[in-house]
Image (cartoon, rainbow, N blue to C red; front, side, top):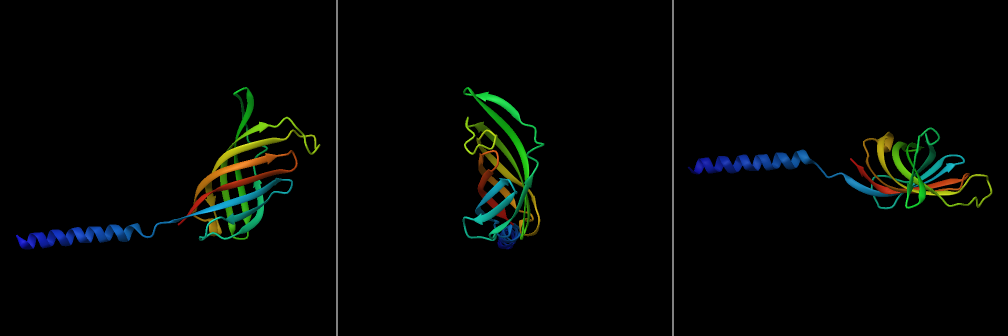
Length: 163
């Protein structure tokens, strides 16, 4: 009878140790911000807001915003344009592609006199793929935009999980 208990305890210990070893270390979530100047020029700066694997990076910011069909709805009496865009950030440390769902509302002004109505937007984004330092990264967050015709600025904040 004692042999049976010893074998059962040894088997339970082996299963537990195997499960712990297979799990490996937990991937680390890192909070970051991406400041982008979408128009004119298309540039970005990625800044870690918490210590971690990802480091500061900068480079070009590009996307399909002109070809993305939007949907216009009236919400609480205000026209809202909803769009889904795919953006690619190409920096010194690699390329990161994100998909964003965004909602734009007009301010009713053209403050800088460029002939384009000023708008503001908020959205959510998630990682689609990455290369270099961004390979196998997952995560996403929220975004805010100031579309002053030309220029158009955005800020993306969120958490990325680094494997």
